[in-house]
Length: 252
Length: 252
Image (cartoon, rainbow over all chains, first blue to last red; front, side, top):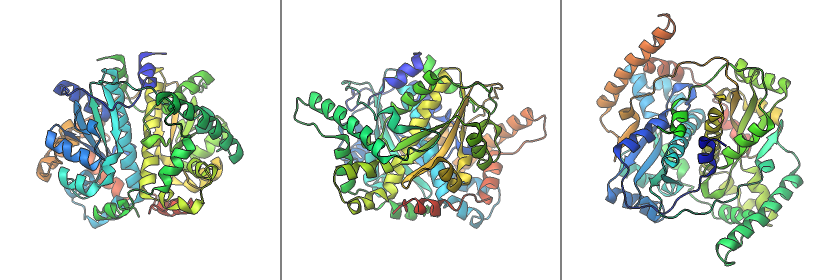
């Protein structure tokens, strides 16, 4: 196993950081790493907003459900889908805005932007971990994108997708075992046998139960499917469709 | 610069591969690397379908606009957003399907799945590159997801997002210069000065024009904004919204 694969395999989310800022040189390396990722048809449809201001971090932490590692970390990044740049580009080329509205407002361009931003973010994460830093993705920003957008002054056609806390770890958690490889990796065709898929999940449930029981001295032992079911019963963030529309991304 | 960051920075898409299959050991390492990525609330909302069958690859190549590297490569992966697994999970937990329909069909869960799949794919890409392999993302699969879905037998709540050609490179291209860092990285707030953003794009246009002119001995020299404008004038894949609805993902 080479250093790169070792870094990738060694990942765990870190939720406790020293109060020690990243150097500007480190930040630059992390952003350049993000930019080195593949991008659909070279559109580079994302923007990264870096947050150092403690007050702003505190506001983002409140939005994200009071996660302390959004406040105390070495640096905080917000990855945004960005089609505003492409609107400016077409303006520079003398096009009529109505000529591109259909493309900009399509589900396709939304998918392009989300994928571009996520590929960039994962490069940043791996680069950070290779430098001995820890990371944690913060999907909790999506609890209230109206507030995030107001705080970061993002214009139309720009959607904050998630945050990334980065810093010097103070506590390293155990790794959480992933789904059986055979459950997420299919050959030639999607596995059509639901009973087979369920039997894999059943085995996985036993492993995850045991993991939680060990980590909590028996006080928690839920199955993976139990966690999923309870998450899905509690529907979250149904305002997102309206938020996207308000930012001129109706996903046609 | 450590090995990991060097691998990340050295990325270029490879569009020409030897006709030499990856070993099963390499494939396993690449899938395990994908699985090591962060996943929103541990939902692991993706499935990867590996394609070795030359006939199937040829069909996928045709859908993708006849890209030869979809046929000739060491392995081909299709990354799918997958919420079918979560439907099975709730069934295993004895829930009524109608209890989770709202969550499964939400824009939020769609974003979770797309982000999860993209983070996993980027881990696979970096791991592959660290092994001396090359990669190319194939967004062209989205030209016709009805055909992709029929070919790979993906069920409802599963959306093929993009392909990944992986293999032993026969030709290494130059790297394409990315947007100026100051254009994609903003501090504290989104840069509100459109004239500043445009002046950065103007500088970038000059760099990209010069790059194309050099690579093609002067026969191509388009600006970046020109490429973007021409891409956006030609709206593509407007059927995607309907496709998602047909797979029970209306993005409410």
